Length: 159
Ligand SMILES: Cc1cc2nc3c(=O)[nH]c(=O)nc-3n(C[C@H](O)[C@H](O)[C@H](O)COP(=O)(O)O)c2cc1C
Image (cartoon, rainbow, N blue to C red; front, side, top):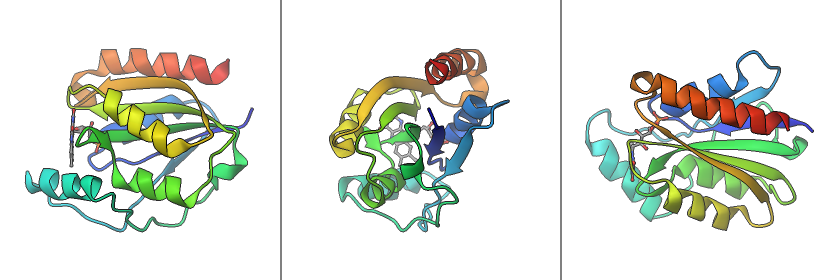
């Protein structure tokens, strides 16, 4: 089964998890880069939250690999305003993942990712979600816990 990891990360935590999942494998890791910047300070919560609430779909940089070519996709996002990041909305709007198996991964600052997963599943349509995993940020301070979750995801990918 051909698999790949697609992720969005504003501050590097989700990126770290995506890279750990792929570490030592030939698996493709594709970063979603939105043509939309956010303030470095606390205002990012306001502007980012607004983009979520308004269901904005920022333009994405072109992808090197199309997700349509894979059977199993890990889709990783930071939780934003109890939902998923706008770049993921853009990705799901641009690509039809119907019929694919999907593993959802969310990094959070401690909040529950349940609503984020629910929102992602609603946007995924006919895809089959085969796993949901949450990792607490900052990943650098929760390395042990993060590695344990990553190990579970790697096992799931190899089943
Ligand atoms: C705009 C914005 C909204 C956020 N909303 C939430 C939230 O609702 N619940 C939560 O637990 N964390 C929230 N966070 C924290 C991020 O989910 C968390 O820090 C995540 O790991 C960041 O991932 P990144 O470093 O890959 O960008 C929010 C962060 C941002 C920037």
